[in-house]
Length: 288
Ligand SMILES: C[S@@+](CC[C@H](N)C(=O)[O-])C[C@H]1O[C@@H](n2cnc3c(N)ncnc32)[C@H](O)[C@@H]1O
Image (cartoon, rainbow, N blue to C red; front, top):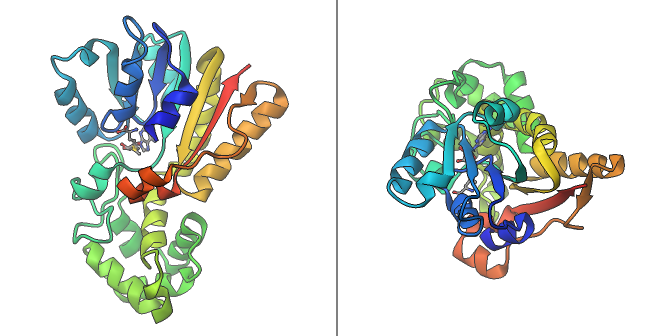
């Protein structure tokens, strides 16, 4: 949703922005094309492999002088911004979740279509909890709760019990097969893959995704100058609910003003080009 991000962040020459989920740098570079000659972007991502990859990609380009890359979780946003002396922030962007690189190249078990180790960590250097540890060592009750709360999975109990019966689970294929055994056949014939919610739930639990988002949003608003723009793209209803409630409360308080009345969805053309974008919802607000 690059066009929509740029429309709502509305970067102007010499303004500074924080991209809290810089990933492969697509949005950050689009901002840098508009905030020259001296505007900067602080690009944060908790995945060290993605930060290294982006550093190599921008080496020797004009972007390298104006894109400051930091490997950390956005839950530490205030500390990151202070440590890097980054001020006069005109906008903050969150493009939540995982990137295509995680699915296609990381080999960390994010995709139910591949046979990979059950890892799912964005930051394997700092996070010690893996999907495999949850699946092989947690009780059926705790796994059931993860699937129900973070996946809104209607068969959470049956899946959790089958996971415990199938131990040890070694790869994503073991997990997909356990979900298949635990769910009715009609569930396997739907448009959405039957393991989608289980994989989403585990990824959220492994990376404490909702807790990090709840910590980061107030920090993002505090650090912006008045007139600053906050843009958040969520990929499932749990994150979107946190964003919506946060923006709504800040609007009532008089700190933010909505720029989007309803969440903005990707265009049909974008969904056709990138089917994974179909669940994206963008919300934007202005600091009063
Ligand atoms: C959808 S991708 C962002 C793609 C990016 N906008 C681009 O143009 O390439 C989301 C990124 O957020 C990162 N991420 C997820 N949780 C994070 C957190 N708590 N702190 C920092 N980065 C996080 C992931 O590693 C991933 O690279």
